[in-house]
Image 1 (cartoon, one colour):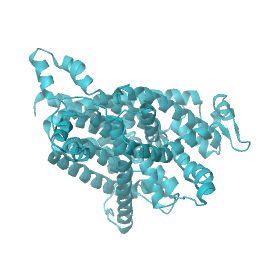
Image 2: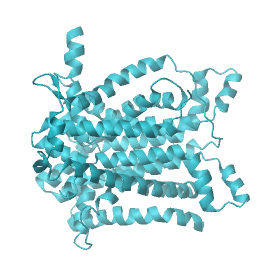
Image 3: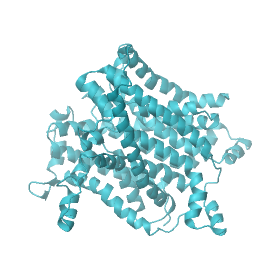
Image 4: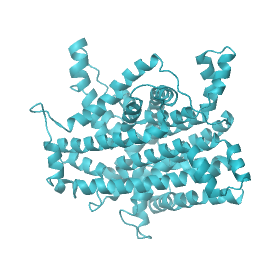
Length: 526
């Protein structure tokens, strides 16, 4: 391994060892005893169902996200930016807020049933508290991963390959299937593995939409730690989760090598909007935009009087809700912004350098190490930090930025890894021959070419930090409130309208931020 690659991978390796591996090892050593029962019948049954629902959820998420990735990365159409922004909002929002938005739209008396299906067709669609509801909820949250990761790759795809195929007589479908799809395969594999892991570790969707009859590994770990107080049982399930996710990541690394990497020039080309895109946008508008809009709508609507109101907003900012959240809403917004911004910047820095080195080293072990944190429950990670406090003086909020970074780093790493694999090395080499140093090549060549990956990683890291709730609940200090915990506390104290109003503000702010950021990510031709 060359020294420059060691220098590039060292920051991420040290950060991962100190803020991820060390707390987990300390927690295992602190709680685990001999006589393991990892493979008992209950754990295996939970593992089987968790894998099954994650597989179905991944298929649905990918089926929803791939057409959107093509539309965003390759075509031009009116309101393209609004579509990209709204589609990504579910992945950003606090889980409890958007889960209730999903329920308010698809519930028995929700908007979809009350104002569309029942009045017109006299039938009801009731996916809640079923396996279909769990799969739909996971797809609702995670399809933006495919849309953003694959869409970013499509937007950089050189059209010369497809044009040459069409000149030789290939149809558009054959050109995509046999020419463009193999080039996009690394990005597709990245999206699939990340989506599966997020569906596998789903928590709020299973707990709220699925109900008590469905128990996944993540839900059971939470129950062990908070209700049964069985640390050993939680560790047993964590071992199973790490083993499975680690194996999947290892296989994924092998498949990506088999798929191969195509070197190409960066070139953008926008095609006309296809007819099938109309049906796709209509379906997404119902399935995704409906719950989002209903959640925003609920924050400004008095259901008893059926009138528009700012009463709930006034309750938030007047200080009346401060006793329930432990601090002011303004403080929650401020600290959430600080934590999320710091985590996003750190994630981008660690991801771009480590992915560069791993792409050069060609070793699957780093894929496993840098992606394995997705297999760890945020609750387990937070308890690891608590166990670590016995030896190291850690206190909230010094713990929260590393935790947020650890949770978002795998997405950034995989996104940049796909980008580096398609990076035109000849441009970098030409600059080096002309005398450009490492910093000049980074700032003037590499980052501009990798701009879609930079923006995508920054946004998703920022989004994950804003919406993270489970680890924050374990370590929470009311002196440093966050929006997600504030919304949860309002919900749990039966101040649902105020919680929905807070969620509405966050949804609108998220939409505005991403609408601004998506311009350089998916460039449009006017």
